[in-house]
Image 1 (cartoon, helix red, strand yellow):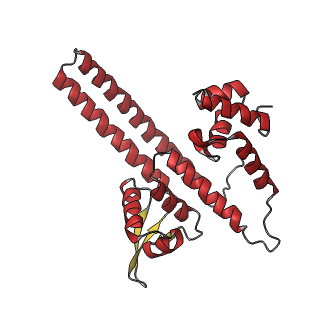
Image 2 (cartoon, one colour):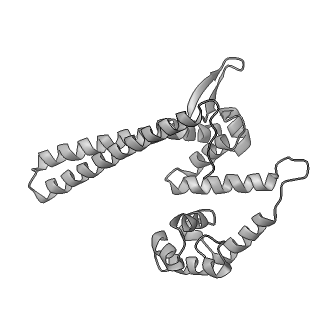
Length: 236
């Protein structure tokens, strides 16, 4: 069934589809499954280049067998696995591995904030590696910096607006690309093949930018409404 669990045979078909060079959409259609199911399955099990059906099926069975400790604490191995999966997903979005590891650490820490020294100890890497990753995340506006007055050092923070800011930064970048492409089209001549190509690129990024800004504003309004006292989030 489309909404049921993936079987071992399903996973073999996913592996075969990837080997054939099929897209996730094509594999989803072949298995009559939602695209999101295939995307998550591949992302959490090695990505398009590393996906193996037997290992993916065994990993899923292992995760299903794990249960939280009776004390109510967290399963350390389960948390480690979650960090690795989070990192893999972020790498697939285009982040470098170290940047993805830093972002995963911040998201999966209850406080939502860590100092550079804490990140260095946690990830067992050099301060320079942390600094470079932090710089990339700040440029994309996925984290923000706060001054810890008690310890006289900066803390790097994840908050509810992190992805909103990152999304808006991406929308602004698309606007810049649209403007550049249109200027290039004017330079090359609007009726020349290269000029037409750049004009079309400009129109595309302009459309995407407007759609992203509209979607972000709709999310902000919906999120604000959900935070209204006395209102609870409805189950999806």
